[in-house]
Length: 219
Image 1 (cartoon, rainbow, N blue to C red):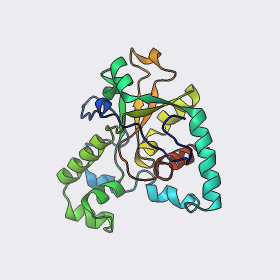
Image 2: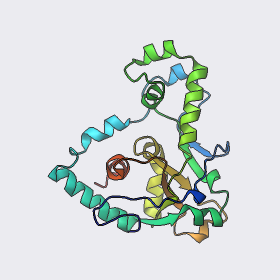
Image 3: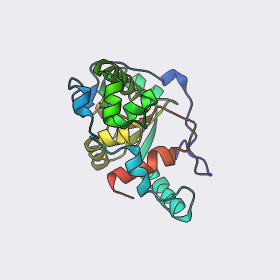
Image 4: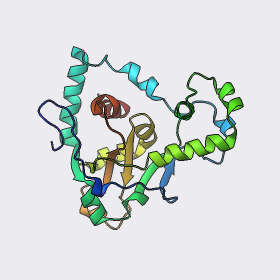
């Protein structure tokens, strides 16, 4: 699979020409309405990354390696690697088809460096305007794609599963989700549903792919 070496480590295709940052107000959004007050959103709405990772084997143990091998094989079967530069050539407005999800309160707390605070303590420290601004910044980060590579679902069943679970895939697996199925350019690809990554410098399997397949319940 392009982008993966024999050591099973992902080495993204670095192509800054295709990288775009979109703050398009038309981007699709799922999750809680941002107009609600932050205090009414104080309860945890979605599972945080911490709720998912305890269900995973300890990294680099035999159980982990077996799970990783399973995921590596699935990725090779389930996704096509697409250069973002080519996607941009076919549809320069692809950023309008990015799905965003309302950030979890855990992520908002982490944004301020206040992860140790209770919901009540956090609400007393930060007003609604501050929290809304933080959520918007976090949602803007969800629209970013690095390294000039996106991963297209190869069949419609997987594409539907990605859209159905997009909030968890965005918040808990850290992927950018692009749904071009309603675009007039959708016929240029197999399913027109893509995943992207907006960060680097860590194990992509541990942070993205294994949580992704665990969210789907496939590993």
